Image (cartoon, rainbow, N blue to C red; front, side, top):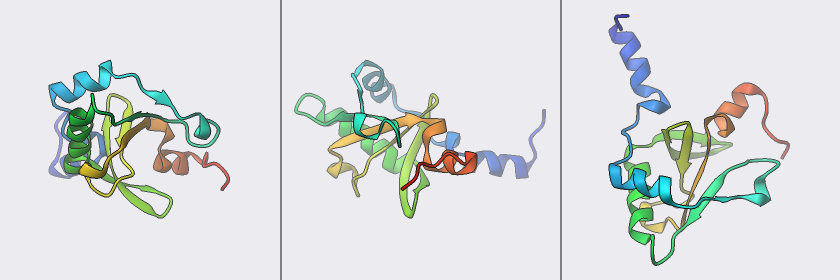
Length: 124
């Protein structure tokens, strides 16, 4: 199927159009144990990994990738950078990569925008 210029511009702005993780970051993501956020299980199910002395360099690399290659996305009135890859969405609550004390991730269907579109936002 041939894509028109218009089709290409739509694809370029889709969440999946962001640059893939570098190999070392991808390996870190795959090998790192992620913690399920029990506090948000009923409202915003997601996982996270906390920066520590052993993983600080990789958390920084992951955060930099999110900030540099992520796409703007909403969470209620907030706008943050989100990186979409492999059916997951990654983000940090920090204002800059260097401030990322943890990285969050959830399934594509659990983002604010996906749940808003599906009518499945939790009550506030």
